[in-house]
Length: 106
Image (tube, rainbow, N blue to C red):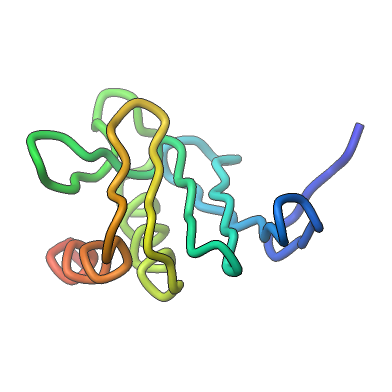
């Protein structure tokens, strides 16, 4: 077993950083590949109907914490954003996440 923590870095695929993004679940993580410009957010966000959305309320433990996690992800630099269940955003994804994060309630 390997235990991971927020900020841990691994050499996989040119460098991967663990980002703790609680909200959907207490242990949710995102995987950031800064050298490749890729962020994998799992269920921390949805990309439906051509727009970003928070995780579905019925399946999310803490919506306020989920919003805080999205705001944290908005601070990262990446071009491509991948989700668990939805189509990726393959260009200027960080700009779209920043705009989305600004729209979330504080």
